[in-house]
Image (cartoon, rainbow, N blue to C red; front, side):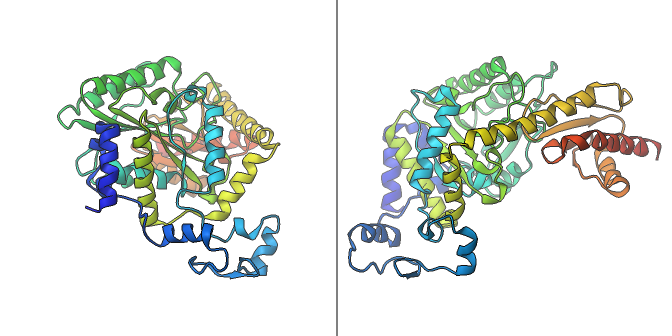
Length: 433
């Protein structure tokens, strides 16, 4: 094993031996090279006052070389904030700004010990980092039965982990904390579990309320009390889009410092929060009472980034940083939030009205995010999806036998009535076929 990896492992064992035990075999071997091109270039950046012949970019007239045809479209930005490589951990100013944003939007983080967000190439990359660090063949990854299909690829296919599902809703149509607890405690023999908490949920658009969150926290603590090592991942892709009486914070703050056998990891990003899907800017943040643990996990994370993408895109990080610093940023976000909330409310108005014949469908509770899910009665969801495409030119997502995901995020409010009319017609068509 590389001596740098061993040093990080020793620091983790000293800071919290339980966290060290959570690491995958790959996670144990990871490190960020301190003696190499990056470290020598960083040293030269400070000390090479005459000529710096270390960096792998081209320069001209003291700035990064660039094409006029590109710079003309980006003239508001300094070339050094666009064309140079971003550090593997991301622009330092962006990391600081995102951390401040996290604290502002999650008061439960006040007084908690957590690291500086590390910039990722959006949410999937952040989850992939978590999988590489902590998931080995056969490890349990616990998710609800209504989930984002990429979890299977990221944790199951890539890392060989075992996907363990529990029903998202209980009989009262609330979050099924008892099912989560049962799935967790079933891992006693393995002694380890990776739990993914995705709120607002994709595909249902559901976020639990305060009492439900208390039950979730209690379930994780009960597992830790039983000796189970819990990697608790909050997938906060749709954070901030809370429209009703749910919690309006990430569970990351509640989990930070909860138990020495629980490692909270927050995966979030500008992707959906700031409506910049193509910019591919996300973050991964660790919480621990131990500074040694936080430092070691950051270095191992940088080792993954260095060995996979080297560093994230610099221009999009610059764009996000400027947006966060814009004095009108919050007002602009509030305008978009109001549009999204109004669409969600309109969907509920339509579904709760007598517009559609009773028995055609029910809908899963939703109060946040981009989506909602219909549970179709007596018809196959894939058949309805195909009918919608072929006869009505409408795209939806079929999930399993009966569920149909509908994205109100990309449907103008004025078109929602027609959208659900088309869905209803397709359901009737399939029934009569």
